[in-house]
Image 1 (cartoon, rainbow, N blue to C red):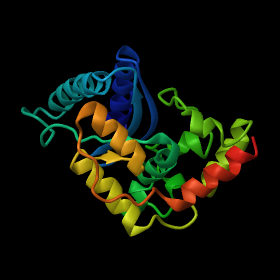
Image 2 (tube, rainbow, N blue to C red):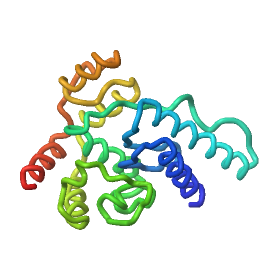
Image 3 (cartoon, one colour):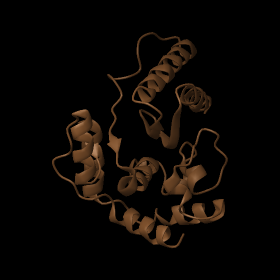
Length: 210
């Protein structure tokens, strides 16, 4: 789909301009999910504004329409990477499966799963250091990342991620939430479940084998 390719191209340009590393993404029919690390506190916001302007202009011109495409400002949450990064990456890439668009994440072409688990080159992606720790070679990392997608995510994990994103809570363990809240004044989630256990055990296993 040309419109998806256009969005990813603009996202790549904006991420480079504002120095934001993209670790995971999925393009759905009515929304976009990203897992990213900005170089400063304004990077993510500036990137999304830039992509939004370009994309809305392109769609309006292509379909001879006017007005905005978005329902308000984008939603975001701060993620404590050590315990939650792989969980959020799986959450993002499993969106097409939960939406009954495909049976497995590998069947959906417009997500970072194609890079993280399949090995397809995607210049937009900057692998996070936790992903790089999954194996010494790309093939090993892809194999073990693919293994994380056996079964489904728990309802508690899904709710925790959705609540944190929708309410701008901090997604992390209690200590991380407290530290960030003290520095930034942001409100932490009132309930912490410790992340997705499967992802956490997986990372502990392979970190110990490095």
